[in-house]
Amino acid sequence: MTAPDDLGQGPWPPHAMDAWVPHRGAMNLLDSVAHADELTVEALVRVPAQGPFNTDAGVPAWVGIEYMAQAVAAWSGARFRAGGGSPKIGYLLGSRRYEAAVPVFEAGARLRVLAQCELTAENGLGMFDCRIEHDGRVVASGRLSVFQPPDNSEEASPSGAPRE
Image (cartoon, rainbow, N blue to C red; front, top):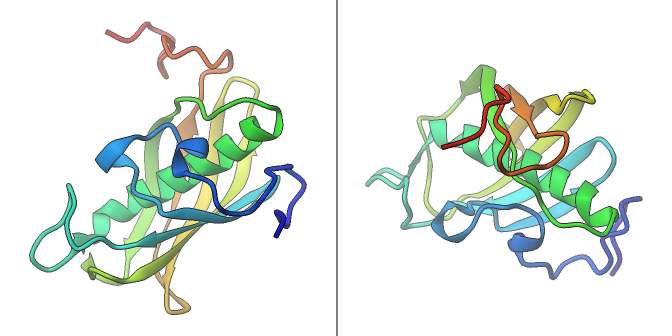
């Protein structure tokens, strides 16, 4: 099966998430990318029974912001892959109007994380409209502001100052 888009990712899946996002180990929260194109990405998450954010009730809904941010990172990674590169570091600057219809994401739940690029600027700033769906129902939504250094230098920061 091939990718249903124009980004030239090649076979769809299998790809380790390392090919999509710079997150590693326990901080790589996505399971797979179902679709990516020039403006959108759909990532999939099976809420784990154990992990860095789990409570007895499940994963708190505020973690949805990170699910969304990693979906945006996967979208960016798809664009770099299309050009023969690999995912680059980026920064979540903030979220606006994040709303969750549930207090927690229950362990075992299969979530669809969707992000649509609303704006990207040459200076590396971007805005994405995001939502998380479970069983066809929107359970969280919000807008993310992100920054990716234009030169893709891992020494750059959102303020332009070197990181310590």
